[in-house]
Image (cartoon, rainbow, N blue to C red; front, side, top):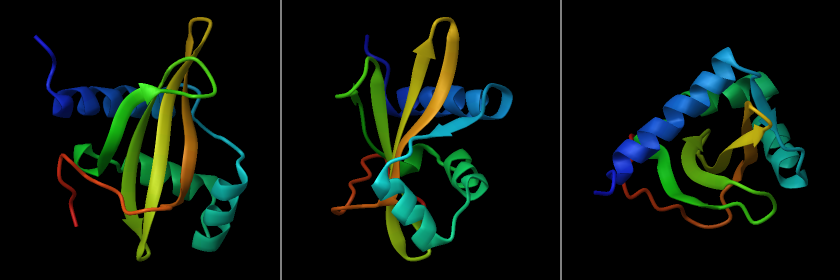
Length: 121
């Protein structure tokens, strides 16, 4: 029997947040689009971490799906911040026995996001 999507999303977020808070912290990938959006929002890494730690099942957009660049799966979320819809792509990467919380994308959405599990306003 397949585990319901809502539970899988909840388990992913729980593990991801535990790695961020009790593990190595959050690695934000230095991509031009991420840096530009963080600057436009006036965000530091601390702000980005706070927003990611506040994600819930209702912010789920898509995934898990294969990472196109590296082994593993990515999960996609969205959040409205200062009037902009922000696209957030997260991944738990494994390096040896260590798990890393990676934020691959944190930028203004390029198209409207879908929230199949609902979204808190």
